Length: 265
Image (cartoon, rainbow, N blue to C red; front, side, top):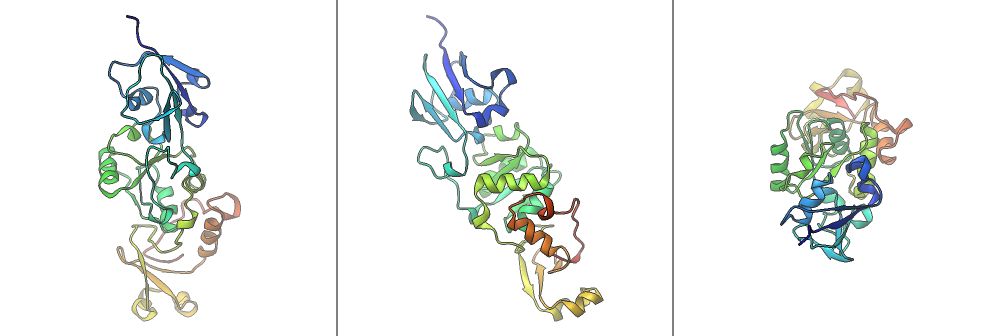
């Protein structure tokens, strides 16, 4: 009996994960005995979280299925239009219900998501196992540029971030997940991720710079770290940034945009 052979065809959106010599066209290979479709696909370099649908000989298949000799396996990516498709491998929450956990290299993206109102966990010392555990326990979407992290079986929902600049990363994610309907700008602390709550000026007046005491009447305070926010010099730029869905140019946030314990938005 000869060696079983299958044919794998990857969608163009998945080609960046493949070895350069394998990009484009069909890929014939001999799968390991008993290997699932998930294991075969990941052995080629494509994280299971980037796969939107699998078809074997034209019929929908699941990641745990096995291939037989001569099977033709089509591996598709996913985009906004596929998030709730019947043939998809997973179901996604509505944009306003999406929660995230970002790996240790995506702090600037995490801040932008918080600015838009999304619950986004981040620490610069997150270990992969912590991220996987949080994603599973709290049903969070993992954000990373680490392909290895996405192969954790505990992670079901994730986005590999292709862009390297923070503004472009935000725009990429907004477009791919269709996030804009879920925007709730300036409702979450960019520093600690806790919700912001309206607060009377009298309660925070001792914390305010003299110029702010004179000009501003409306304030919000973080329910976590207790920072106080008002619509200051950065507010218009951040609002423009969000209205542009993370584009570059005038809407982009200044590099290294920092926060002080008490500061304007």
